[in-house]
Image 1: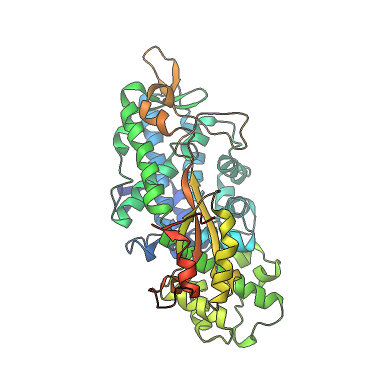
Image 2: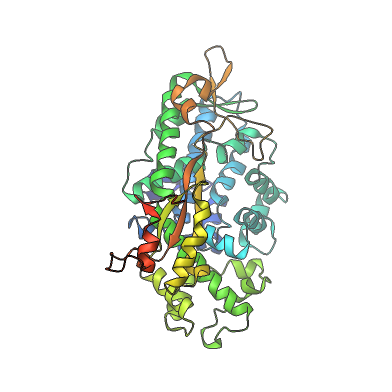
Length: 436
């Protein structure tokens, strides 16, 4: 334990309390400090200008909520909670996102990386500072922490603190993202939820008198996904970023990349030969620096997408459904007719979320359902008690969008058969309509 508690000021939790030397040492590692340079919400700051917060601040927040849960369990349920599990829970909470790369999900899609697998590598690879510090606790401690993150740790209470349908990770990012985007969708009563959270032998449940606070959390999460995480302009900027990286990779693989503009730190990823050391050198700023160089690149597509990303010029979009999906080739042909390469200047993007789902062992990724503990000690699954949650349980929400250059929406001309007019005939009220 530290001789005196260390605190970090935080806009969401006020103070983040650190009492263990190992936690402070982990925070001070280069691998964890790298998270200061990776934005939590990727390109969402192009829509919500306050969304500049980092994965560093989020990780500290998840740690703090987990610390509060452990304190509550130790105080109120000492017969059901083994406080010797506290340190593994706190370390897993702090380190759960340490494997994220720059502009996380877009980078993963292009270079086929997996931030969860890389998180486990950072914890278990003896070359990292994080591994060295964890091994000072016990030789097998890095593997224990990693097993919490990959859901194989034998204590389900610890696993559910970090990863379940209502966990420290989700609770922090909803509150933190709401705060930084300047929206109220993600706000819920964290204090009340922590008060009614309780351990039982097979995991974590919630007292029946706190069910409405849990309902509020579920609805807040639903609203944040619809209004913030699935925002069509943010997704348009993600498409720009994805095509920018894809174009750079294509040019390099074809041997056409101008050596004067070589992105040295990205080359191992272009070649598929990257190491953990290569990965840990990357952050948002590294990519932005290369994009700035490429503003002068001779390839017009790479140059244009670099400018689009840095100057916030997203592709526009319309929604489409399975009934109108067959029209996309016609739209792509019109985009090509207007002078744009449809491989880069069009895209299909779908974003869907399951706000809440009851446990189904036959599903590909079964969820840990939210249990409500009755006065007699019996457990009831949340959606069987809450008509509100039942209404959205098991229902996927989101949409499919077709992205294209804004030029395709330029005002009508005298020529009714112009490429732009033909394109716009397919659109109505932001959606693709079936003309056949």
